[in-house]
Length: 77
Image (tube, rainbow, N blue to C red; front, side, top):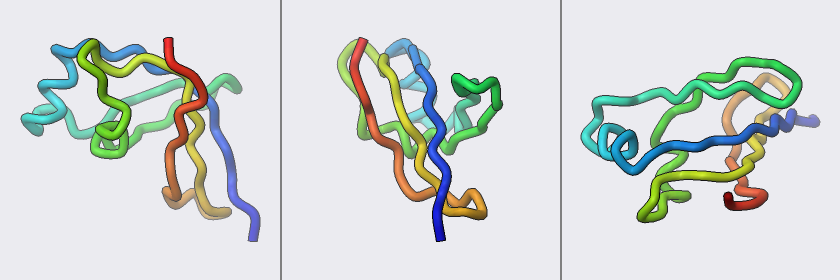
């Protein structure tokens, strides 16, 4: 059973991250390089937090039926 991989960039300010941690933002919408729009659970991005926010290129890995597996940071900006 093969899954899917979706690549995208995120540039999120530290102010927006505070809203994620407070629970005011629960979903983050990204556009993949192929043009697909994905809504991610904001909690999946907390591991990539820096003092400046979240900035980089990422890959979302899902199952064949698009269930979340993991997010990988490919590079930081």
